[in-house]
Length: 115
Image 1 (cartoon, rainbow, N blue to C red):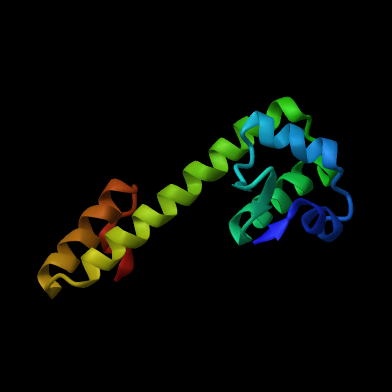
Image 2 (image 1 turned 30 degrees about the horizontal axis):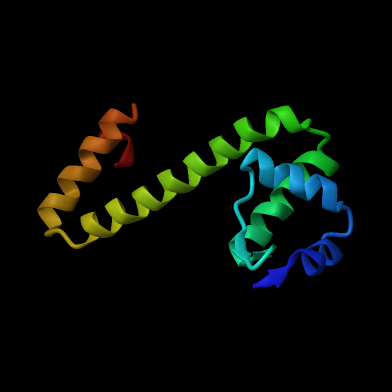
């Protein structure tokens, strides 16, 4: 965990007032210790992303919640897909082959193209 001052020192383009606004908007949800915010590695990575979106890509504050919501959805989807992939990998060969065949058809790929 790092303090707000340490975080701002690491993120050279970040201003304290902007960080506070992002916290108020719920874009970042740091932990509280006494009367101060503290940030973990996940918070720091998210703030780095928001800095890139805002400062480097020029996105306005109003569009950031939409973009971050989409990023969060992608992360949840990737996590779900990893869990499904692990579950499929544990199945007998015939089940895995059936799943692979079915997903190729659903995705619009012809299984005969693999031959």
